[in-house]
Length: 157
Image (cartoon, rainbow, N blue to C red; front, side, top):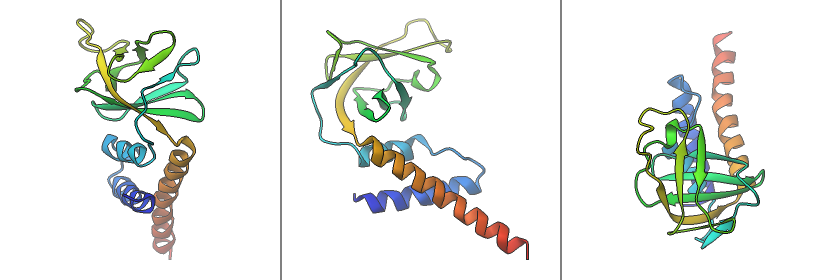
């Protein structure tokens, strides 16, 4: 799927969501955005002392930021149901290097069902073009603002 088509699909989704009163993109839309800007799978990545940030993309994928402009798309081996409710995240690694198919993420924080938290194994790691994602998100926001401004202008006449 080419980048322009992804941007148009996401813009359409944002407009529909805006009409429904939901300002946030769905997890499926955000996952599609990150997948469109992810590179080929790699064996792993270095944590450089910790995570800069992270965000769930449904219960089978997430993005982790190791620096402000460095992100990794993690595909999980199975569903990780507590990701949406986690306030913190633990990532297993050996020597500061996170490896696909051997390391895992564990959602942490004050969640329902804290007992028996199950680590979610990382199946695949792909580098993300963080600048392209930020630009695409900005394009989607811009596309969702323009129709509203046009509606307001026509309603004021």
